[in-house]
Image (cartoon, rainbow, N blue to C red; front, side, top):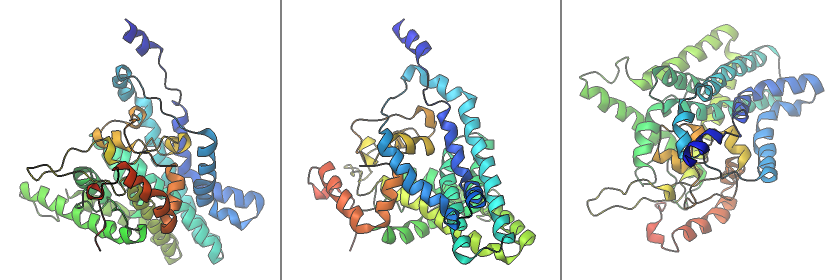
Length: 372
């Protein structure tokens, strides 16, 4: 009876706040609007200013959210279509903002610093959109999986669809995973390793899958080729419509966008290591193998990606149902502020290395160490 009453009485207090996640897709529109309103070119840089200054301040002001939904209500939460539609809307907003930004780049004759600012602002939104693709790509519904590929198309990083689901989730927090950072490894050392390692892994994973079906790796069913094909169509259409002036914009926003994904990968598993069992296999991924954060504001904007341990335990669990674990190691700030630290290696090492060592009680043999 008590459980039935709990299920009936519990409500998601953040139900409509999740719609704020869609607004990050509109950062380029915000930049354009603010410049038109004020005339100040600094607002071409609205994307990084909002994400890396305003959001960390709000995280500090509004604190943490550790409440978990009762397990009795999770099946109902998972079935509510509202939460799925909220993610679909983000993809629509993403393309609206991306296309408007490209049009402004092509027609406004911006000075280089404004051009760069709008490109970085767009890259900020498109990088956050990779998290939308992440949420969609873990679903088994074919429509949502294609939406994931569409969300990855602007940054030309479609192989993430393959590598993240079938590579990273298998090898996470092991030396074999290109997307798991190592103790003492700076982000700038990690970045080329994860970019090229993930690309190679995604290609190999699809080659093996298609080989089992007696199909060539170049078959149309190769998910990498499908995703990259969408990028070629999108970029090609913009180049045909507006000419070569948009090419630097496309490249800048892409690089900034996918490095945002990779810097998040960097901070999610830094130094954490799954131990090998006697049979040579790694132990299962548990809450202690992911860095987590309960910063309220960033969790809203990132579909609770910061509750990363639960995501690895249950990859198909939707964002509204993800749980906090007391035993999971906690970052000292939200992802928005931790990204800035990761961009400045001495600060990152100063803040995080002692936390990794404390997590393993000083046993350096249990840490995923960088090789010399």
